[in-house]
Amino acid sequence: MPDVTAKVNEAKKSIDLEKNNYVVELDTTKGPIRLQFLTDLAPGHVKNFIALAKIGFYDGVGFHRVISGFMIQGGCPLGTGTGDGGYKIPAEFNKTKHEPGVLSMARSSDPDSGGTQFFIVLEKSTHLDNNYTAFGRTVDQASLDVVRAIGKVDVDRNDKPKVKVVINKATVTETPK
Image 1: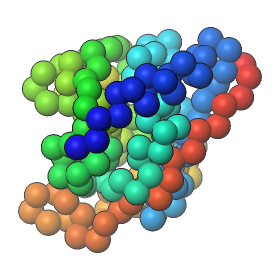
Image 2: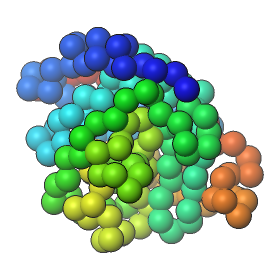
Image 3: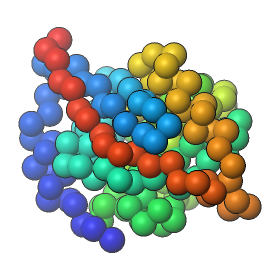
């Protein structure tokens, strides 16, 4: 497993949530997913995700878990759901509802075990509210349509897509507020 702690910390230094707006586009094999962020509710998660995108961590990484009607999950460098970037970040639970298009941090049973794995919600999932850190959402309907298309791929009995769905490249766009 790659330990990208130093690279992520260095990339975070260039991220200014006060002065800039950020969008990350995940160019996937099913189309682009553009994401905007909840900078006031989960700034640590936002900076972490943007930094990972900036250093190319997500490039070539797949969505390893797809549960129709629930969510799509990616960000594991091993493609198994067991990998990370060599570090964990503390939870930033907030009042954001887990509704279609919401971006949230995947974790183990330990609330402070998030790092690189994320998921995007396909349908309203109230059991996640206040239990997982929501930190962004799809920017537009076209992005949500791509998320839903990924949510419809054939999977094996372990929820792994039978045909890989890959993030070809994650691109960060920064614009002044």
